[in-house]
Length: 402
Ligand code: HEC
Ligand SMILES: [Cu+2]
Image (cartoon, rainbow, N blue to C red):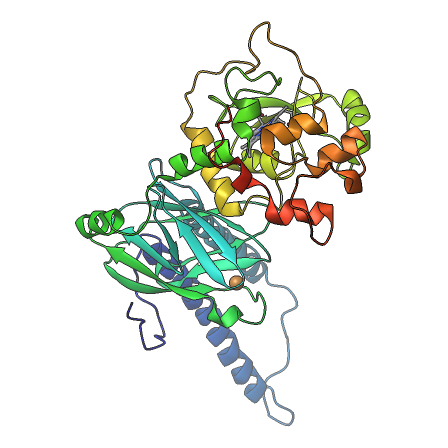
């Protein structure tokens, strides 16, 4: 892709946000300029006029002048409120995502950008988008703080590990534009650049249908859902009492939030004392359920494995897309009526469902990490890291999990 060779003083205006942001910037520059220049001129004028030894009239200097007092009190107040209102309206228009925006998922990583289209195609350090359509970026980082910056679109948003940040834009001009990481993120921070290519919608469709991917985001998520044993607990007919994920997305869920940093061994005791609250099941909630287990759906045992270190952020995006795609009718639990109620699973039951015994569960069941039954990847730094690094996804492949 052709990079733009020059460093332009003012980047092109290539998105709907560019005009209003430039106007605000110019407006503030003009206002500050008028005051700055005016004050400088007055300063020099008075310095010269009343310099020592000059025969200026210094008698009857006024001590108080109400109109001037009012002017310089209320004048700046009104002016600043106008600037505040103006800037806020621009800010809100940049932050409020219009309905129907296409979501593209972004993972920042030392030192590259991974971008995933909902149709399944993913890109590295390049982003292709159609002109004239709103695009929302849902972003997270796998390591340190990065920042997604496209000067031509006037968008700039930090990308933070452990949370999702969002920004949206609507490109207005076909062309290629710089993408920068605007947060110092390590040795090769300056290499963390890319190109955003804005295309004609027809060209974009053609581009989208090329490339090496076979599945949409949700389809990839469905596959992971089976490979990582999620369906073994959440699938219909499972004997484990786990919440059904159908219709979860976008709805409020009752959860218990144990105090942060509660050791897993004391989790049950802590939960017994924690009242339930309600949170919205959004992307971040689902992410945290999978990776952190810091919120426990009320009425369920905290037996879900922590998948941090086993799944990449990209895979969590895929799983979330799959969960989003599930039907909207919500049934309460997946455990079959009259099916065996299983509050707690033994380590063996975990192994048969997910192919590994999760570390949070080892602590919960009191199984010492070192005594994990063999049959796992045999050698490695320690059984813990072994679990995490090698996982057992490969073992689950081709196996039919519910
Ligand atoms: C060992 C059984 C088990 C496995 C395997 C499992 N889960 Fe769970 N999951 C549960 C249980 C039980 C809960 C509720 C209690 C808790 O959070 O521990 C739950 C909660 C959830 C929730 C929150 C649901 C809600 O209603 O708020 C989500 C989302 C979720 N799991 C997704 C997944 C995904 C994705 C996977 C696979 C990567 C997975 N689970 C693997 C048992 C499991
Ligand atoms: Cu970076």
